[in-house]
Length: 204
Image (cartoon, rainbow, N blue to C red; front, side, top):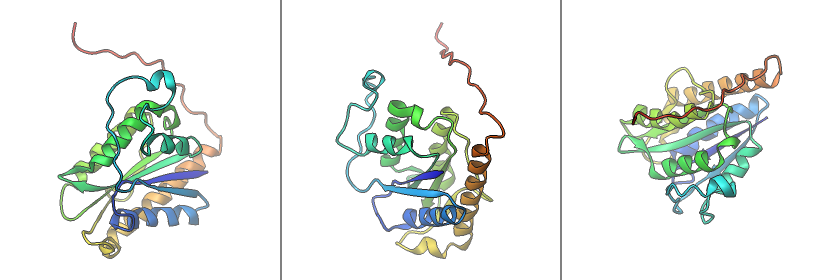
């Protein structure tokens, strides 16, 4: 079993990374492999709704991290996405990446447990976290929770380490995810069969 962690912060060693490190080390202690992808400071394109991914099987834009991350998810059993909070939202990189990954390679994510992690200086983290996990629900991904919302606080690099409750929340999240993965992989119950999607809108 393996969990893919995505660090959407531009700062490789910032507080988002520190929170994800706490999740990863706890998962490893529970016998779960992890892989962390750092998106970095390079541009990530937004989805332009061209629809070419539905015939090509991957996003038409191949000059950023999107397609590579989808491939990594194909060999992973669960997902954790960490983001800093910008103006009460996940940062633009996180939003652009998630939307394109899920639209172009949704089958790699569907049905796999997922969690969002939000890091902020002071406020807006709950709103950002809600935004981050909404796509999980659309992909039938069980949302993994903790003892509190998956939030840690800090501005300068390393400050999240001093958020004692935040670090405990990350460890509890990881243990909950490990438990769920072990239950799924025990094979005691089959995943529920999905009904064919019946999309509709309200324009008659």
